[in-house]
Length: 302
Image 1 (tube, rainbow, N blue to C red):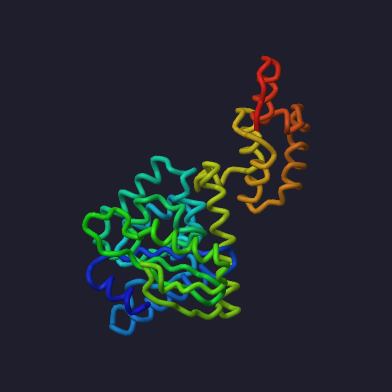
Image 2 (cartoon, rainbow, N blue to C red):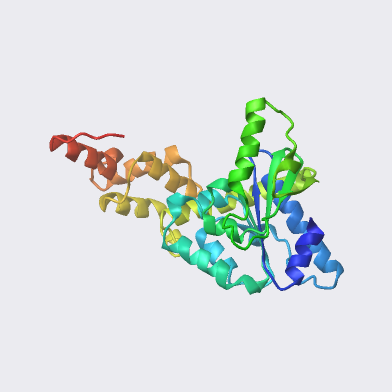
């Protein structure tokens, strides 16, 4: 698999891989093995400056990082939670459209990109078409490799309709160990080991740090704003009616590495010290909206 990826990259093309599988099966573990393996192969052939693996820089969690990555040349990127950050239909906004354009426009940048997602089927059709290799982790340490069929007129290169029928027949027959070779896009099987305990610790630390960036991005907190006192910032947001509910406050606290319960308690104390209403829920726009609808005689359906 690693040699295949290296050959694709050496032909002056990018290599977009999607790793899918249920939570806890080892998608990220496999992505790390592939990224490290590619880095080693390029070092062997005297091109060690390309596709280097770095815990902080290789992992991508936010839209901003994703957009920055596609402007680079001959780099490796692992989008560890791609479906939650970039390509979920809930996030199909202008930024996502820009990212898809960048991937298409910068295909000659020869970047190696790995997207980890729960299900390949849920990805946008444009992303599926950009994918060169699809790896499905079926159980811990075991994955099947698929690549798109070479077609001229058929739009669905992944032959999803046919493969879905094959899979449904396995489900109906109660087959526990399906013959994946019957899939029209099947190309092989791959086994991979677990990470070394030290690597596991590094990965967890990276993930924790990056998830904070995701929370900040979704709340519109940039690097400059992050230098502002979080309590003053939240009080300002409460007064301006920008806070939806308690969950938003908790997420904001976590994004600043603060304990949510302590953060809310300190907020109340600061508001009280200013002589202002310290009942946080009275500021939430979600509660105000529901109260307004009830007063107007309309019904709220969740």
